[in-house]
Image (cartoon, rainbow, N blue to C red):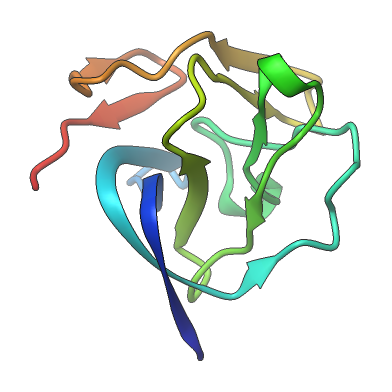
Length: 133
């Protein structure tokens, strides 16, 4: 797979881990500098926000970004080897609104802003890990 590096961008990386109960837990980390694979722009302009949280891996389709200042504008990255997701964030735009939508339950989970210092957060539906860079 071809890798591309984007200078001057921040990114979130999510890994899907399968728990003993068969559900998948999404780990999201906030970093600087970005290397990603398989950038997919064909969904640009769509108004759906699909899937994340503690669900079966088969329900997780893609992650999308909603940029509030400029209306609907986001980058979608398909899974890398089925387990990693990368979401590109231009670093001159803030705040962001991240929305995850589960198409089976209709549930939407939203965070209004990505903090400068990414903190550990955990709930029954989401789990964030601190930036280790």
